[in-house]
Amino acid sequence: MKSKNNIIFLIVSVFLLSCVLFIVHTIPENEVLGTVYFFNGKTERYVTVDFNHIKQLNDCTDVTDTIAIERIIADEITTGLSHLSPSSVKHLNQSIFMYIYIGDKELAINENNECIFVWKPGILKTATLDNRTSYLIKWKTGYYNKISKEDLKYDIGIQQFGIPDDLNNHKEPASFGPEEEVSKLMLVIK
Image (cartoon, rainbow, N blue to C red; front, side):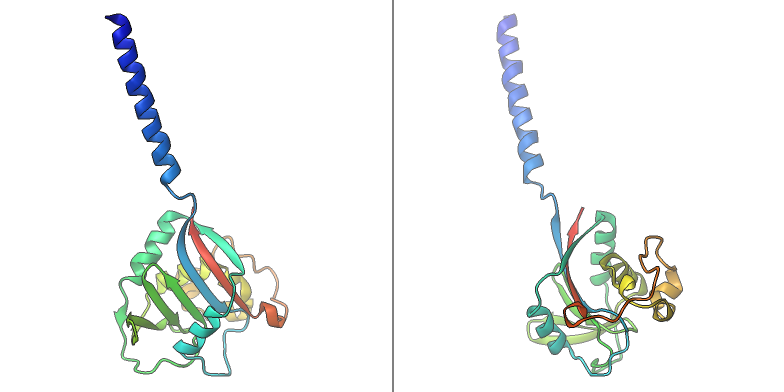
């Protein structure tokens, strides 16, 4: 009787251990959150960049780096992107500097956090992205590291939430060469 109980215990233990190992191996180590494409350096643009143009630039650019962010920050970003506030702006074509494709959201934002997004395939709408979500995206993608200290103080997110502790902007960014004028980052969740 004792050996029968030991055999049953051993079978159940092996079964439970294999289930645990299967679950551990099926959870992605670095789940892809999405991609972010942006212009580096000076935030002012002397040419008009509309949604279709920045999307084309994004589509023609290879990923330059992969950034791992904490799940809690990723969740806050996706929640913010799902709660876009309607905007009175009808045609958002000025100062667009960032294209974001995260989850099922595809949008481009300007320096005032006004954005144009794909509402349905082929239909674009305007909205305002909340300052916190914009700040988190700019911070975690390293966008703040690519602009000068002088320009940094004009950012709405920096004014509201402060300079991130891990900002790597100890000196003014050098002038960028053609291959460094943009960044396209893949965001993954740690």
